Structure formats: C-alpha cells, structure tokens
Image 1 (cartoon, rainbow, N blue to C red):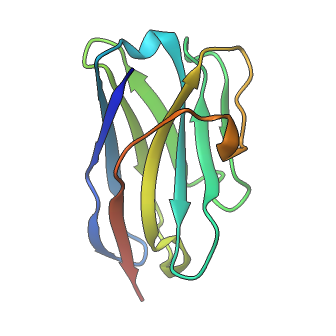
Image 2 (image 1 turned 120 degrees about the vertical axis):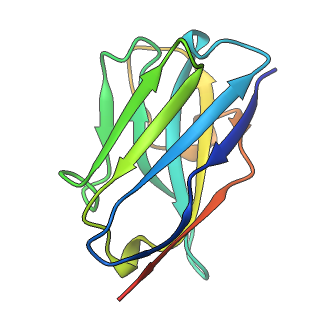
Amino acid sequence: QVQLVESGGGLVQAGGSLRLSCTASGRTLSNFNMGWFRQAPGKEREFVSGISWNGYSTGYADSVKGRFTISGDSAKNTVFLQMNSLKPDDTAVYYCAARPRSSVVLADSRHYDYWGQGTQVTVSS
C-alpha cells in the first residue's frame, strides 16, 4: 500500500505558475511509476504527465507539452509537477497516481492502482 497526498494547488492568473507536489508514505516511490491526471467539471479525468520509477522516461499530454515538467525527489519521496504559462483551460482538480514500476509511462488511468485526494488548480483569465 502507498498513500499519496497532493499539495500546491491554488488560484493563479493566466500566464502564471504553480508547482504541485505529491508525497508518498507507506512505500518508497522507487517502487512505482507516477502519473498526474486532472479532471475539470463535466469532463472525464485525463492524463497530464507521467514518470517512470527511475526517472528515465517521462510523458506529457499534448496540451501541456513545453509548459509542464514532471520530476521526482527520492530523498523526499515526492513527485512534482511544475506548471508554467498556465491557461484557464488548465483549471481542474489535479490528482497524482501510482502504478507498479516499469520502463513505460502509461497514460490510461486504469493502469494506476493508488490515487491521492486531489488538489484544485484554478486559472483566472
């Protein structure tokens, strides 16, 4: 079992930045691939970014490429999502998730076994 807690969400103006954190307890993140997903009101949950257990592989949704960066800090057992040049369309609840480690980053949420409670990101125009 692993417990995931997100933080760092908030209200920001368009063009601004936020850094989300996902801290794990119960297991070390080196055992897992990690993903960030988001869900806006009335929309399905969608993949944002993912990172393999060793950090060698990353993946991004086309909508965030060049603006968001995923990274991990094994010493803190934490994964980060740096979000720059935010747009109103980025408004959503952001969730981190974990799945058994592999060399491949998967975008399908059904492959992820553990989820955090989510953190709200609101981008005003």
